[in-house]
Image (cartoon, rainbow, N blue to C red):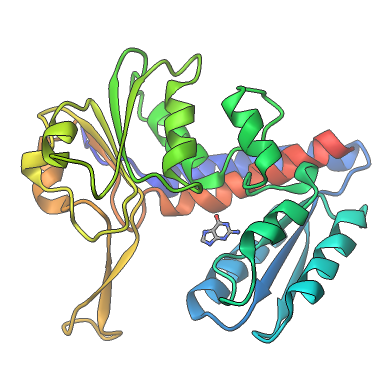
Length: 290
Ligand code: GUN
């Protein structure tokens, strides 16, 4: 049996669940709607936003793509958010990150109605996650990682889990999800400056790598039979590729994979799950808002 966790297959299954839920919502008179706001011209962000909107179309959700120039002011962006907050056809609002440097991202996140905060970045949703309130919107990437662990049949109860990375988008919510009732893992949150990181990782049954450093986690960091979830998507120069770079995770996959009972590849692991969980969150928002 392969130890590779197929994120494309799991995300396809989640999207099929979403398709069924869209049908039920529509039967109840609710057409779920997602607004995606992009400020500026970042090419990677454009691709992400495009695939989010396309996935909405595939599933029958209403979507609105709002593309604003890189010169958009903080006040103009706040007004767009306020209009979306007040729009009954929109249940989920996502402002693509990172915005241009003159935008105060924290203030924008706080301006989003927490009931429409499908990224789960608003302080109210962060607090709900800490409180294990089931109405919380859980950030999409860690939610996707949890679903991958579940689908791979990984036992989290009593397991030692090490999360490398402490971001608000992945590391911190990931740690909360793993330690929550029902998951019951014993969680260590490490980061790039943790002392003796390799030794910390060697104690782990489950390693979540979300540190943003290409191939940092090497075979000597991982115990035999561990489960490794690689959240990293790093561009590294590669002259042999037509586009001049290749994508690699935070894990040195080729040397780590043979030691693992389960591992996610990059690409094709965590990446496809993020959009699928965004769709789930949008449907949850539509159901909760009615
Ligand atoms: N940029 C990269 N990932 C994300 C995400 O999950 N949400 C938002 N808003 N921006 C992102």
